[in-house]
Image (tube, rainbow, N blue to C red; front, side, top):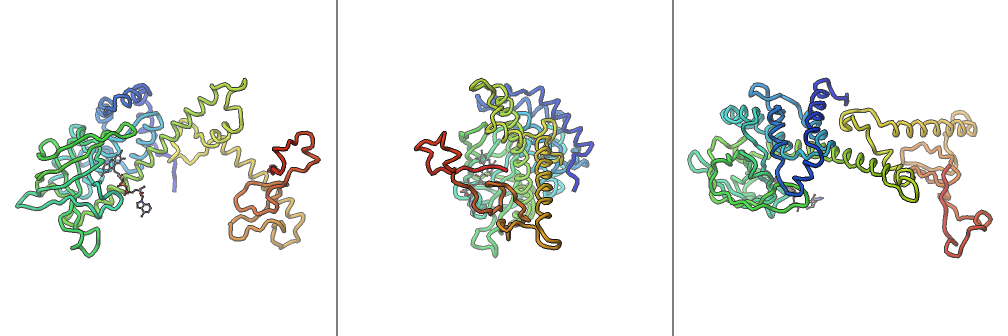
Length: 393
Ligand SMILES: Cc1cc2nc3c(=O)[nH]c(=O)nc-3n(C[C@H](O)[C@H](O)[C@H](O)COP(=O)(O)OP(=O)(O)OC[C@H]3O[C@@H](n4cnc5c(N)ncnc54)[C@H](O)[C@@H]3O)c2cc1C
């Protein structure tokens, strides 16, 4: 499977890169301090059509794929931003464009694609039902052409900033279904007109507009149900699975951002007369983990230069090893040292290090050795007696 970004994706990435120049770290820090929603950033992305990235082109969207969305989110985070409002909009538009009725799609998708509406809120979690979603107790009862919803939700994000919210409720009790996941239904709630929703902001450890909701007889038109009544679990998976992929992309972007900041700091911070990056303890982990800054890690198969160098070093070491091994092995015999038993580890076991080699699966004995008194006689103190030393090759 090709992992390099397509030409279109490269254009998307460069657009995001240019856009993020207008939303520098100070912008995000200011929001964090005020715990505010990134209104200007969201408006700008909507104006550029990113709100409709996953909406099919027949409704005016870009008809993009989940990987396009993942790239956008990763790039925003890799440049110090917080794309949460968009992960909400992406997975919910993915859901609505696949499972909502034609009427609902025609009613909402074009405005969502044009950035006239926001659908960034999803209400599933309850005080007694998080991971175990089948235990939700919010109930939706049908009365003619409407449903009346009663319940309590917690940790529901962007309720105040969104026009539309997708809500999960039970239309049949848990005990009645043959499976625990039966009896769940999904509803599109138009927050601009819904009555009976009481909300309280929950303080979170990072800047997230998250709320506790009490739903007191909230009326929703029956046509706003997404999917069949009582069979909402399948469409729900089309929210939860993309959600995980999209949030993981944001995390990869965060990792790129933090590693780059750490690498910069390690170059600038001088301790004992040299930058801390010059010490092995700081430089090795950063060098091996720093991706090439201009490349997205999730789709570009190219490894960072330092990693490539390390792999080449390892390869040449293993070639040296196999040469040594072959000299000692009779033709056709298994090429392992007698002291490397790696059965079951999947590693052929060609360790030639004179001390602990550090490779997983290397069972060379002894893995470490006691410092001999002759080598340490000059430096040995009573505190170091009995210590062991590991040596590289
Ligand atoms: C900032 C923020 C924003 C959020 N926004 C939303 C939102 O917009 N909409 C929404 O519906 N929810 C939202 N949530 C809620 C979030 O999705 C839930 O926290 C999540 O589903 C986990 O539920 P829980 O907190 O009840 O954890 P629990 O279900 O109580 O689980 C606690 C821990 O146990 C682990 N665990 C549980 N069962 C198992 C098992 N069988 N094996 C191994 N580990 C297990 C879980 O992984 C978790 O780490 C938000 C949460 C936060 C913090």
